[in-house]
Amino acid sequence: MEKLQGLFVKSVNHYFPDEGEAWLRKLPDLINYCEQKWSITVKKPYSLSINYVAPAVTRMGKELVVKICIPGEGFMNELEALQLFEGKGMVQLVDWDEDYGLFLLEKINPGTYLVDVLEDEEACEIAADVINKLHKEPPKQTRFIPTVTSREQNFKRIVEKNPNGLGPISRDELRLALTIFSYLNKTTKKQYLLHGDFHHYNVLKSVNGNWIAI
Ligand SMILES: Nc1ncnc2c1ncn2[C@@H]1O[C@H](COP(=O)(O)OP(=O)(O)OP(=O)(O)O)[C@@H](O)[C@H]1O
Ligand SMILES: [Mg+2]
View 1: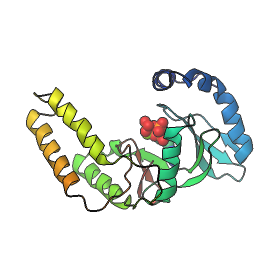
View 2 (view 1 turned 120 degrees about the horizontal axis):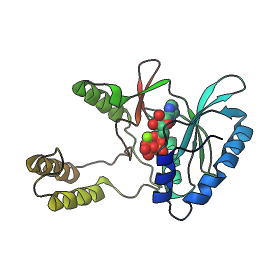
View 3 (view 1 turned 90 degrees about the vertical axis):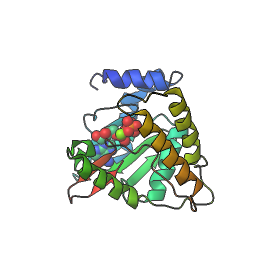
View 4 (view 1 turned 135 degrees about the vertical axis):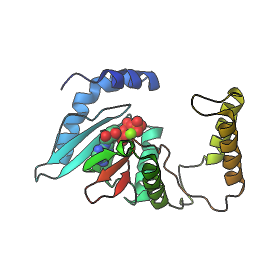
């Protein structure tokens, strides 16, 4: 196995101070396990943050993606979300392994990032289109208890801490955003499951021109 990406090693150790280091050491074995379990060859990883994600290919030549995570809360949430969204606006889950924190996913080709759409208005329309597809009513029994109301509280703290604005965002823009956020939360009639980490590096373009969230 090649040397691991420096930023990846740093992030894993930062976010998982207890189990990160041991997990990084186990990665070659985990990759091997994936290759045996799914009869695939795992290729060089993508640019990584806190999970090991790499393209893979089956013996029949089908392209897939392997995502290796530290088992636990985050993995279980991602698993339930992928199952509930059923590949609608969201990448298709092919298989998984709860014990070792593994996902086998459909590969999105060419996988261009939404951030590479330079026209801001066009990018926003694409993002809105994808969000529109990610409309799923959560089942009665679900891991997803927290709602966006808790994020309103976090946002409120941010606004209070930054009375003069934050970076390129002015004070008035921050306040307006909070007002809209509060209004939307107050007037919510029905709850839907949302993507918990929707941003322009987590939306990829597929061959047929569709944009898909990961
Ligand atoms: N199904 C897929 N098809 C093609 N490329 C993918 C797929 N899933 C992930 N990738 C690539 O791997 C990278 C990392 O994947 P992903 O975003 O799922 O990891 P992550 O660790 O959850 O990252 P973050 O939390 O920063 O979003 C993506 O930015 C993308 O380049
Ligand atoms: Mg990502």
